[in-house]
Amino acid sequence: MREPYAGGCACGAIRYEIADEPLVEADCQCRHCQQMSGTGHGSYLTFPSRDRVALKGQASHWEITGDSGNVKTRGFCPTCGSPVYLTSAATPDLFTVHAASLDDPGRYAPQMVFYNVSGLPWDRLDPALLKFEKLPPTPG
Image (cartoon, rainbow, N blue to C red):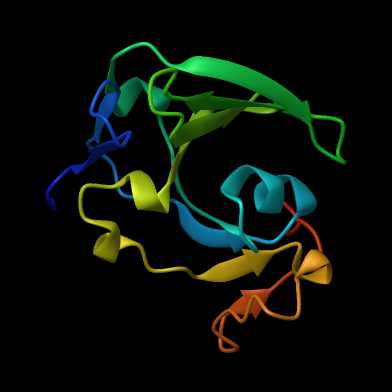
């Protein structure tokens, strides 16, 4: 087992430690992620079990409805404003963190890009990454 994934907000008021390996590491170029990140995309690691996440501190939350109709809840620090994590009502067991919130953001290794149809011409992501116009189909 590798070292747990640890991170938090810029001021340290929110901290997490995750004992799992991520299911997926992906960049998302949807308009919501562009607006939330203040740049061309968001970068995320999604973990399989909310139960294996140790979360300290009190995040503020806001909800957004995706084009699928599912509600996503974004957790951010009320003090420094840093985005830290997100969850989805459609997949309540999963826990997603922002790559830049990791103590060692170099551990992030994107595998794919979601919503590349919304990509901005100046946001040049690795051309070798697997790309999906929207979200990839879910197995099953």
